Image (cartoon, rainbow, N blue to C red; front, side, top):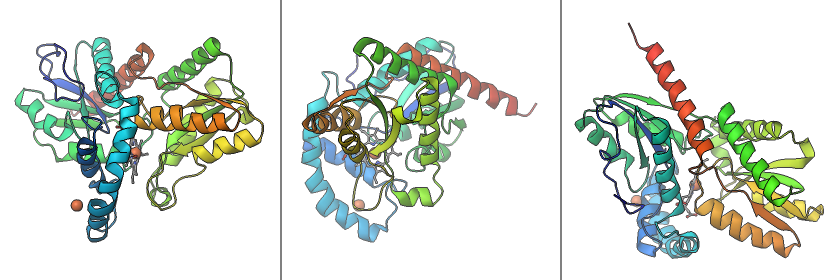
Length: 338
Ligand SMILES: C=CC1=C(C)c2cc3[nH]c(cc4nc(cc5[nH]c(cc1n2)c(C)c5CCC(=O)O)C(CCC(=O)O)=C4C)c(C)c3C=C
Ligand SMILES: [Fe+2]
Ligand SMILES: [Fe+2]
């Protein structure tokens, strides 16, 4: 049975009978259609999460309802339309396919996927799993680097679920198999297209305030980037790290991807390869912002930006995640009393 990409799919269908342990890949979420109403619903749910925006509701709600949602939704809907796939939003399509690929790697377990915002809903999945006889849930947020704004929000929902044994994978930012898979994707791209002069590793940004309050996200991004550069044997000057997808007026992590590309162009770099190791699968932020808009800007400066896709549903990605799941389950078992 083929389900619409964004629909809440029948999570009892693909699972091996009798499996009482479920592994759930949890991603951020995405609109169900590339239109203003669907984007508005999605942004509203997302931007009401206190883990994402922690301002007083007295200040934030009027700003959100009367300025951000009315102004941003149609603009962002057009952006989604420019990357939409026949089966739906890229984030939804690749997340579902990745869960299917992981299920093939782990036939003894039930592998599902869910979204923190939108469908298929992470919140709604947990009580349904319990009703279906699942006893243990391992949640694997599709964020290699931990952040309170993403991973902890997935954890909040898990914490609130009752009647299940639960465990959350906090991060996998230097997992050797994951690092090797990312490095191999760069090698393959360079083998097929020739090596760019510079490798830019662009991560989703975060307000600096979060980092100042102890969010380890920037340290995780730095460690991921360094591990990938090491796996590729790149000298220091041949790669750099930057942060993309700023939102709002406060100060976000620096350097920004846009400024870094401007500086590279000014230094005379003509061919830059860009990867996004903070994104498990391609989405609006990688495809529209980097592969389209930033590539156009870089071309206008006389250079060529070659975007290297995320690991998506590749066998190497599914194998790396399977290794992470197996190790987590083994640690979980060994921590159990008796
Ligand atoms: C205060 C706002 C935001 C924080 C903090 C934030 C952190 C954060 N986000 C991701 C991953 C993704 N974000 C995506 C889209 C997106 N992000 C924000 C805002 C914040 N993100 C917005 C408003 C949007 C929607 C698009 C837009 O209006 O510009 C996506 C893509 C979703 C898709 O449908 O394709 C991902 C993935 C991380 C990893 C992160 C913390 C480090
Ligand atoms: Fe509100
Ligand atoms: Fe985001």
